[in-house]
Structures are given as C-alpha cells and as structure tokens.
Picture 1: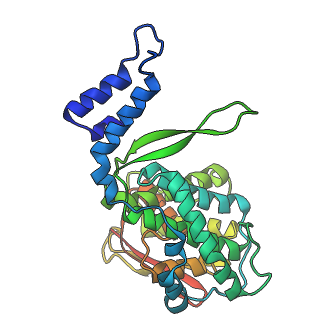
Picture 2 (picture 1 turned 135 degrees about the vertical axis):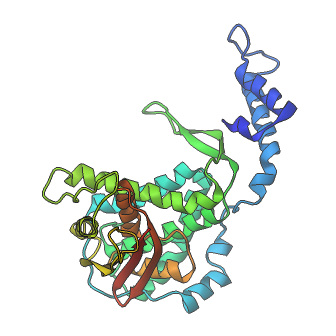
Picture 3 (picture 1 turned 90 degrees about the vertical axis):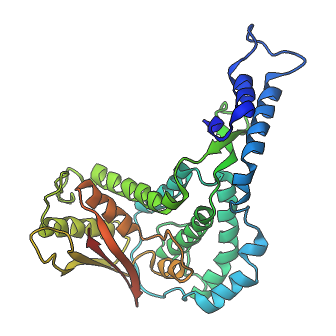
Length: 343
C-alpha cells in the first residue's frame, strides 16, 4: 500500500479519505470523493517528495544527444560489427525484449511511462549513428529477427534500464491504463507506487526475473521433447558432468532460436575435490545477436547488461541448488565469452 510511505497524522488523514466513503454511497456535492482522493494522493506525494528528489529525472534530448553522448559514440564505443549472424526466431526475440521490460516494471523503480519516453529518446538519438556505421540497407528497422536491428534495440533498452536502476525512485506517480469499451478512447489513471525491493538488489533481481522468464519458456516449449534441458536435482548433489550437460543444452537452445551462430561450453578448472564448488565454466557464443550491444554496454560500465545466456544459466543452476560467483563477461572478435565459478 502507498500508505506505507506516510506516518502520523498524515497517514490517518489519508486512510480516512480513502477508506471511508459517504454512508449512502453517493458523492457529497460540496466535497466530491475524487477531490478527496486527489488530496490524499497529494499528501502522500508531499510526504515522500525527498525520496523522489534523488531519482533519475526524465531524459531530455539534450542528454540523449548532447556533447557527452556524442563523445561516447566517437571515442569510447566500439563500431558495429559487419559479420554474418543468424536471424532470431521472432518469439524468442520478443521474449528477451519483453522480459527485460516486464522485469523493470515489476521492480517498481521508475514510472513506466517515464521509461517509455526515455527509451524512445535514446532510440531516436542513437539510431542514425548506428545505421550510418553499418551502411545503407544493412539494418531492417523495426524487424526484431534482424540481428543488426535487435543488437541496436537491445542496447537502447538496456541503456535506458541502467539509467532508471542507477538512480531509482522509492515512491512515484505512474499513469496506468484503464479498461475501456472497444470503441472508447484509452484512458489512464494516476497511481501512487512504492518500491519494495532494496536499491542494492535491483540489478540482481532484474537478472533473476529475465532469466526465469527464459527458463520457463524453454521448459514450456522444449520440456517434453528431445531438446529438453537435462534436469538438475533440485536439492543439489549434481555432478560437474550433469551441470555441464545442462549448460550445453541451454546454449544449444539459444542457438536453435537464432541467438548465436554456434556455442561451446567447457570446464576450464575442476573443483579440486569431490563437490562442485570451485568448478569454473567457460561459455562461448559465436556471433551472438548482442555482439555490439554487449560490448557497448560494457564500455559504458553498464550494470545490468543484456547478457541473456548468463541470466538464464544462473536461474537454471539456482533451480538445481547451485550458486555462482566470480562472473566475467568478455568479447573477443565476434565471440562473447562468459566465465563463472560454482560457489
């Protein structure tokens, strides 16, 4: 409840305004209930204004395409790669984009109408420089199955997500759509939202939600087929070979969905004992759909990044009672290389 942000007399006043309609169920002409509710919301917002003041303000075109942004593109950002890449399966591309959006929405760290505007301005500012670097006719605008376009739009999405997560709201107002009739214009209500996830947990939680969405979809689509990911024991006790088989099949499913040209998963260091702890894995994705965006996000120190395979792998291992540590993601030529150690 948004009342969690208010204490003392303010809380009592707001609670009374919200919870106590007129006895006859009708509006009082002199003080319409919608006015009382508006006043209640104003009291809430005044009480939490200091928490909102530290959050990221709406993006402006001056920030999206100003001197600092142009200098980053010219001096720090890698050039888009001109390499042969697979076309993504549309359902999978949509899943990656939508799960990233839905995860941010669930975190309640920014008004989603603000995020959509910020995302739009970043796309607008970044698109033409990206297209010019690749050349005419290379990017199929709006086509998520085109790896060149997906690479761009995923960068813009995660650049916007980083901006919102870095300086999150604690409480905010958000415009949320109202259900209307088929021929009626869309309407929106202003809703007060209070974040419940601690700021230091936002990045990790975002990755968990995206990874869970990918694993759930793979289980739904492939769970009863020969392409299913080998099951890990939920209570733990899995061997290095069992974990390796699961991680390899997960990578294969990414390749099947057009995310990369090919994949390879190997153990680069054993545990040195009987258990899994200390075992280090290396995952290589060749010509992934996020080859440029992953490099560009890393160059700007972004966290989270669009390292979709690792998000899914971490969730898969967690469901088998396996934790990870010492995570590193690097890019060499047209390869994305992810390394992590079992905790």
